[in-house]
Length: 270
Ligand code: KIV
Image (cartoon, rainbow, N blue to C red):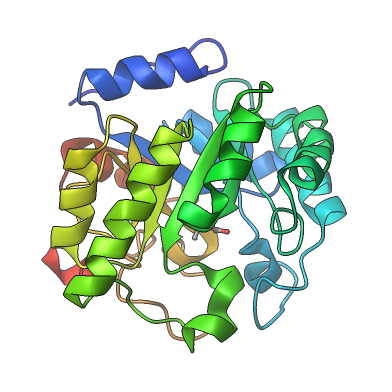
């Protein structure tokens, strides 16, 4: 499938239209102006200012130390560097867990910095907060499955939803978030069959990271897919830099493979 050049910034309405047309959605993490410009020139539609920047930029062991001002700073940089991509900003640990009102207050500087949507980790327990934000003009992306902010509760970075009970709970979480008004849902580290089941039950798009090829779109951490980040990568990370002539060519290959539905293949799925 050919990638149509985008001439203005993608809106939620554009996103919904592409999803209704069964177009795969392409997201990458991004935390600076240069990668923002390069990624969207290669066809990336959604830039996620993810709190994984704690790991790959700050050198932290987890995403827990990332602050709201860190995400605001990087969101503003991404906004300045991009013209066409939709910008989604993560709500870091501690900024969305206490109450809907406090979450709204914390989302305000992210939207002011240039985000068009905020991402919250958590399932049905985040439905009330999702509803509160969505009804007050802030589009929300949910994030279920492996939620790195809960790494200590989950007992490590493990694939989620392997048992029938866990799979049913994750499906119920997804439905609760959609009913609460979430605009999109990230599914992280799930068996591919569960990624597909959840996607088929929802009207909103799902963005998979280690959730198989049948989700509505894909996201990867850019430092991982360019093989910049040190250490062992999760199974779902493909090194798009291998054999690529340039960073932009590597990102363009990722875009092409996601749009064609060929990434992730079984090798990169659970
Ligand atoms: O912070 C991040 O990079 C994320 C992705 C893993 C979805 O939340």
